Amino acid sequence: MDTQKEALRRIICTLSNKNEELQNLLETVNNTLTGVQEESCKVMSELEVELQLLHSTLEAKGAELCGIIKEEKQRKEAELQKQLSDVNSSLLSCDELLEFANQTLTITNEEEFLKAAKQIKERVTMAPAFRLTTRPVVSENMTQFSVDFSVERVVLQRLHFLPVPRAPEIDVSNCVVCDNTITVAWRPAGEADNDNDVSVSGPMECYELEYRKSNNRNSSLRAMGEACWEKVHDITEPQITLTGLKFDSSFITIRVRTRNKTAASEFSETVALETRAFNFGFDAATAHVELKVQGDTVTWEPQGVKGHDPRLKGRENRSSRSATPSPNKLTGIRTGRDRFAGESYTVLGDEKMLDGCHYWELRPLLDWKSFSVGVAYQGSLGRFDQLGKSASSWCLHASQWLQTSLAAKHNNRVKVLDWPLPQRIGIYCDYDNGDLSFIDVDRLSLLHSFKTKFSQPLVPAFTVWCGGISIMTGLQVPSFMGQFLCTSRSLSNLLQ
Image (cartoon, rainbow, N blue to C red; front, side, top):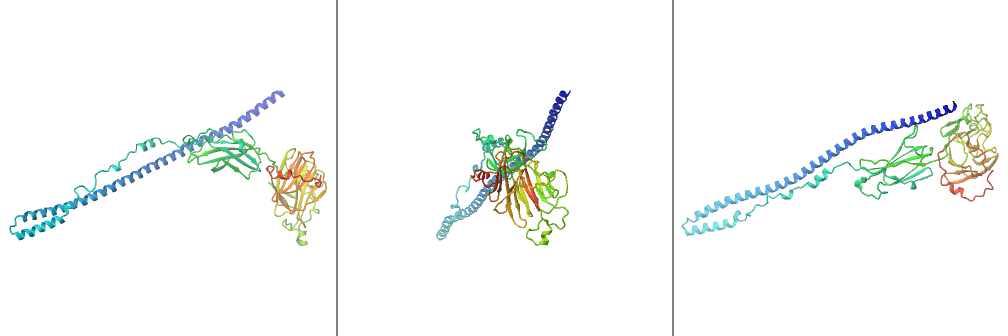
């Protein structure tokens, strides 16, 4: 009976997974169908616009060529009309002179005849008819305006859709994941095939890259609750570096495509790059009742203290200091069994460290007075235990209450550090090698290192009194840690 029930449970689990997969596929197919309809309307509209532009261009060019022919026709007509007018005028003058010459022949008086003949000779010399050309001033030939658009007609007959670029190929060997940045490189379409034919692959204007976080290396469909694609447009080079990433998933999946004027290629094969990092939050169930946990921030909000102002500075007058009681004199309110109480204003992280290297950062808020950051064995601290005062916790303590101080604490032993109070602290824990280091990230300086041998699961641990802190997780071990890990620093002064 139990065997059959277990087999049935496995079948139900398989059917449930298949059902979820089919639901995802159904959503993807419906979205694709909608996309096909929208894209079809879009490209039809674009085609109509392009054809209208082509028609308008032909009309404009035709009007331009017709205008040139008309201008030449008008020029020739004007010159021929002028020539006609000159010829008619010369012909009239010639007729008058001819009639006068005929009349002169009939004169019998020699003196009058010689006088008339002289006038005729002078008029003939000056007659316009003898200065005119005997050919038309312009030719009727207009062959210089002949056209033959046979080549252009062939080009028009070849009108077709813009070639779609081929998908590029992500070059995994040249992709780099480091310091919470990802450099993605790819080979342009055709390069891997030694094919430079633009008519085949289509002209390229830019690239588009999409990425999203995932916990499944081989997922081709978006799983339920998985992040949507983040988009990067107008990439002109075959590589890009993504910065400012929080690695709070196992992988970041990436795909890229080529785009020309109006068309885009298919996306490349999706590549999953591993982005493992230490992610944790504050375990609010462990927080002292006077600590308020909000996301990545913890603030100290005392209960029952009138006139408290956490922004008060340590070196104010006595009346001002009395409004902010000393942490050694405040008493906690009895609360749940798992919460820290009394003078232990502590909260733990909600993820444990069993092996490997881990890194996170802390920033004090502007109004802070005192805080500690470090690690502790999971479940080892009592409700009233304070960080650094037992053999099961290690911490860096900073204070600017009354006076500034920075110290490393472990097993109730304190080492005062001669260093300005940092505004950004990096915490590095190498569980396997027993290293716990604190870094002033802004100055890239090692504040302190503990060398020990961890034997139980560790959790991040924090103490906050007066003010607050914020943490940044999802960080890889930064590359600058190498310079500290390789330093041949003497460990004789490090607390054990």
